[in-house]
Length: 136
Image (tube, rainbow, N blue to C red; front, side, top):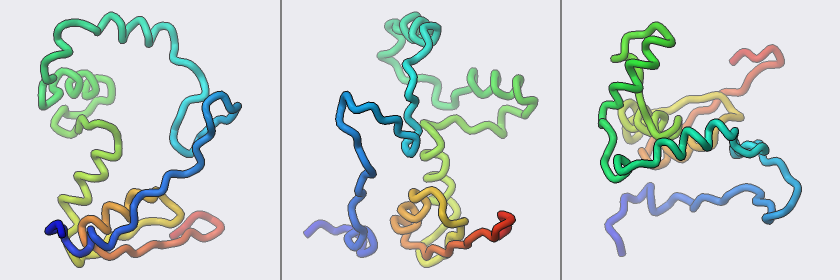
């Protein structure tokens, strides 16, 4: 048997939601998929970026991007986090701030990944519903 932590062994595997077959006329908004093809300008920009530089790791601090975002949003660049999507940010925050046996609270219904990350940490989940006027 693998030396996995008990809470990991007891977790249930991810079960994806409805997946339409290719060719079906379905717009899936539950997985943030875009029903429209990419803009020709986006394709052009991607193709223009395809150079030998793709074989190298980018700047680990993403400084150029953070500086540009800081200028657009009028923030200090040190306040800007570059990540591979919001899941990475959520993952890092929960890993940094929620320890084993501690409690993670969030509004329900909400993003199911919160519960998964809490289970990985061995944390307890506490959910809160909303009233009709959207108060906790």
